[in-house]
Image (cartoon, rainbow, N blue to C red):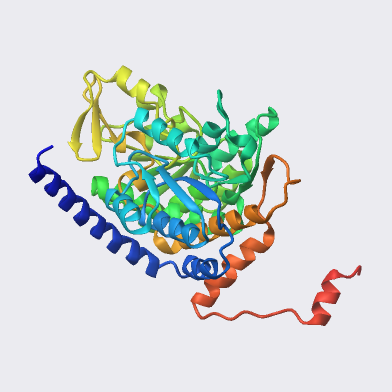
Amino acid sequence: MPAGRRSARASHDAVLADAGAARIAWADRQMPVLRAIRERFERERPLAGLRVAVCLHITAETANLVRALLAAGAEVGLCAANPLSTQDDVAAALSAAHGAEVYGERGEDRAAYARHLERLVAGRPQILVDDGAELIVTAHAPPKPIAAQLIGATEETTTGLVRLRSMEADGALRCPVLAVNETLTERVFNDRYGTGQSVIDGILRATDLLFAGRSVVVLGYGSAGRGIAARAKGAGANVAVCEVDPVRALEARMEGYGVLHSLAAAAIGEVFITVTGAPGVLRREHFELMMDGAVLANAGHFDVEISLADLAAIAVSPPHAVLPLIDEYELADGRRLNLVTQGRVVNLAAAAGHPAAVMDMSFAAQALAVAHLARQDATDGPGVRLPPFALDHEVARLKLASLGIEIDVLSVAQERYLRSFR
């Protein structure tokens, strides 16, 4: 390559890294809990000499988790958990300024995504931090699985934990996995508040729709679905919920939402948001009932909840981009269905993901879980388990302290009474 082109490339990378550094610093100011843990890690070095591989969305918030792991003494490699979630400037800054190995760029194809996972595994990490279980599954894959040498792993998502528990049931899981996704701080703040706000943000950025007065259908009323429904309702939408779990469906009804079979909802919805973790939640029979102009968005981890094959099969021509993040499918009767971000997770593909203040607690739990794994002795066998309850309390305690909030403490007499047989 001519010297002039090399100089231009170097200049471009420097500008990109500078922009990423500014984004990381901005997020850091909203993440006091993780910052406090990073400062503690700098003193204690709980991960000294360990190799940690991280498969998460490459965002400014993730960068601050990586900084905490580096401060703890770890060698850290990072790849993207989703091809459309990577912030290229953040990746450049992490590599240039912090010395992390970073594999990933926005829009990478599936072959590149798989190749990056393999490169992380080739570094023979001892602890894995995963989002969707792809890294853990890759580490268990033949012909040379590294799972036997792993100290352990953490998992960030419900979808990933479903896969890992299936591996455990089959006797295929060969390391301990801490289900960080099921900590209280993760479920309440990440799912309800983080997903709730960022999904609506992503749809609004992509579509510029007015939610007030619009019919919004939320498919799935788990922890994240609750947050999405609440934020849509708060924006003035008429919200209907579709569920397969009778308890969740009843809860949605008692909280004031319409609860419908998905085929009934298909006929009245204007915006559809899937958040179930299951494939084919919206499929041909739903598309055939939808009104002209319906918007389809997925908030689940993988792009399987809206059947792209069914959409393509009933469209009269290939989809075309009507907006940068919207693909329009025209049907034989002239109706048009609008798919947001190719069915990929909308809050990251169309927006910036969870606010940093939410990821502060989620990634604080991840950092503490990794340090806990490093302390575990070798007798702790394979299996999916909850992190220690004290981890949740420590994250919440640090968050309250950052807000200047004091809470009460039980007296000795109260503790004795609550422990006693009455």
